[in-house]
Image 1 (cartoon, helix red, strand yellow):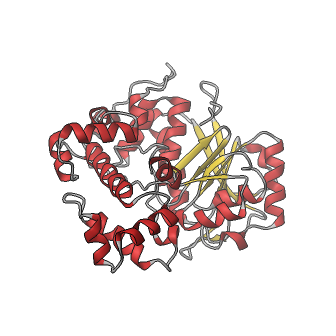
Image 2 (tube, one colour; image 1 turned 90 degrees about the vertical axis):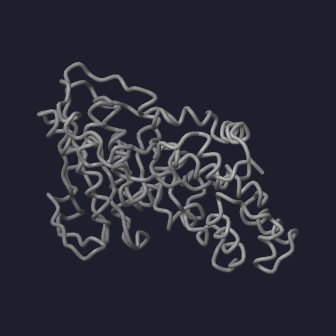
Length: 366
């Protein structure tokens, strides 16, 4: 991924949030709250933020709550970064005025972002051509078809040069924590996450769990049933002949289904599911490598370690060092004092992270 610009030490950043009709309130809160906490923990105004709509009128969130913005978008120069907050019915929420306004911001070299389905607006304006982006999983297929020049990822969030996009829900929280870490240091981002009882900051390698029906369509119930059987039997993998028998298919028919819709063999798909589960357990539990190999259906620890390294590029023991952000420290400006909140907010529970396999990954392993 290309690097993104950082801010000058001590500078206050201004972030504007464009609210589209039926935007998701949770995504907006997930993006704003880390900024508030950054100011609170440091005792400095590192960030300012405001919301706006085209004319400053109230905008209804997807849950029916009306939000009155701080103003209209007539003066975008006050924002260093503008993030589009999308939600339900994104296609109909975007007007020609929206795309024209976003294009004007791009000409001013503004940093642009989107949360939930906000990246659709950027793509509609032609501002993601040649970029990689994230969007809520419900719109993955539609966005790939509508904008072929955009690289749509299943990642929770994507930072590509001066474009920042994320899925919905809590994914904007992870994205903003990474931006804060790059601007003001990893210690601050860690303190914020701990204040929110959110110890493990997910990274760009974490993926949304996309329901299989959104990948292969609802007209393949037998394929969905086989995958469900695989997911429910990771500790003691079911023989492929038995899987085929359960859904009244021959093994050859089952293999053809996987190749056609998932671009891999059933055994490769099954292996990937077990490795993904192992990675989750490595990050979220204290199980030993031997125990992990057993509960994920591997006959021996060396075989598990070999498969893990081949698939993820690191041995399983390295995953214990934590997320990418904890493995690669970010330089912290000396102006930020040590945070006493780090000690106050330690040892809170960790939110689980769920990943799914991308089609490109599956094809490369088949």
